Image 1 (tube, protein in one colour):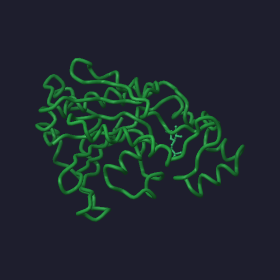
Image 2 (cartoon, rainbow, N blue to C red):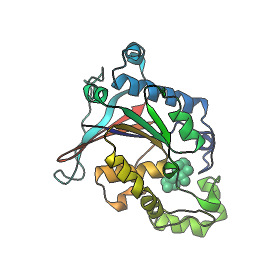
Image 3 (cartoon, rainbow, N blue to C red):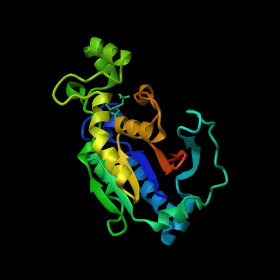
Image 4 (cartoon, rainbow, N blue to C red):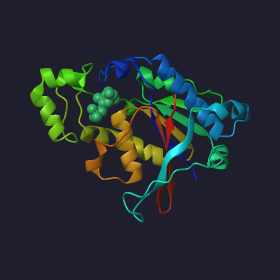
Length: 247
Ligand code: F6P
């Protein structure tokens, strides 16, 4: 079985200022997350050099784990994996196959992915993984949008899934779902393990797709910075784990 890992990039300067969109670089915090991520994945793959260092790794046990799929209720109870301290769980499976790291083409995504050693990982950038385009609202904070464009703010709140940001290139969640279709096919065709480094809206769509969640759940799906999700497709559905970064 192969695993699909999904995460947002580390904290960017726009995240730190509360600005949406843009193409900012990682903050020192964001760089620390990127480093923790590479160590964690290397550890999960059993790269022995990192096993010792990874003992102090910041991403530890999954904070959530469970199954989704047509054979299980949509909201399974969450298990806490306290005993997985050495992360032996998925390791054997991860060692067998190549490991791809796909990121968006935005600086904050690229900066995360490029920390993976190109000799050991197939690293590539894919524009389809770029964040939902907020059109003329790019670079604003939610407060600024509410003050300057109250009607738009209200319209988005009413129907976040369908709401398309005005201005050049502006997208809705439905637009993002559509643009991700070919990429989802490619992810499904890929037999190797895969880490996708992307952005909040895109991560929500991918997570919802692989977990079989309803469309209506996508736009408000909990998906904070610092979470790393592992999805393992199984005949009966999908097994998933969520890891939280402890800085
Ligand atoms: O704030 C980070 C961010 O990725 C923005 O670039 C993007 O517009 C937003 O999150 C998407 O989240 P939401 O749809 O909840 O506004």
